[in-house]
Image (cartoon, rainbow, N blue to C red):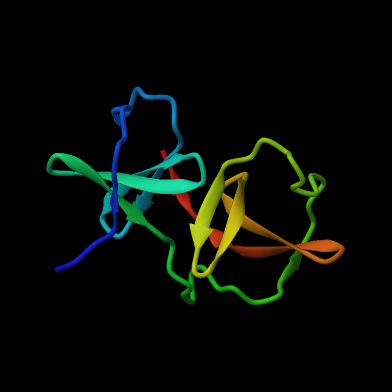
Length: 107
């Protein structure tokens, strides 16, 4: 099985590393600089939240007081785009509003 590997990664991810941990496909991914990293053997795999019924990519306007422009929220790869993790939800900036792209389980 092939997978995307994040190379040259000097930081060790674990429950004490300070990065947001997300439950994803029966394992834990760590949000780090707009990437999802999961430990695998001697390296880290790069993961993406798939577009699904749980995490759609549709236009779904939601109340959001942030605006997500240099806001400091974690960025999470979702399908072919990047969303912001806001109070456990994936928010995607779309015109004059944010779309809710579903819930994530954070640790």
